[in-house]
Image (tube, rainbow, N blue to C red; front, side, top):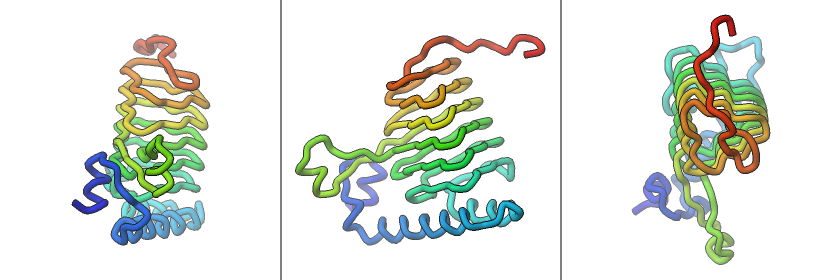
Length: 192
């Protein structure tokens, strides 16, 4: 089994000595650098670069503001009406899936990668990756960190500065470190 196959299967793998993974990360970093260097007066060029980088995009109805960084790109899928503000980081060693109408504030990070707790394996550079899933109609506040293996349901708001270490159910406001559900979010009131 290759290191990439192990990575995609959620097993412990070595990303540092695998030439295929190294080439793929270098390609993604080069595209991110190119994207981050494009003038904001050229949104078509930015979108063209993102289409080369990302695994799946839904139409032309998405925006990612520079700076943006990811590990591979091909493990990222975004739905319709997606917006990621400045300084978004997605370490996509595993699949990262965003539903429709997802809004991400500045400084947010999505980390599928983690490292073993035992020092021997960690010092050898071994890691694992678990997928992240974000449902539809989600607003993620500024400087939120989403950890490996988390699913955020639909119709969710994650408060600024939260660290999401476990799943968040649908129709929830979650805040804190670690993030926890503090109340249910219902349908919007008329005129709200």
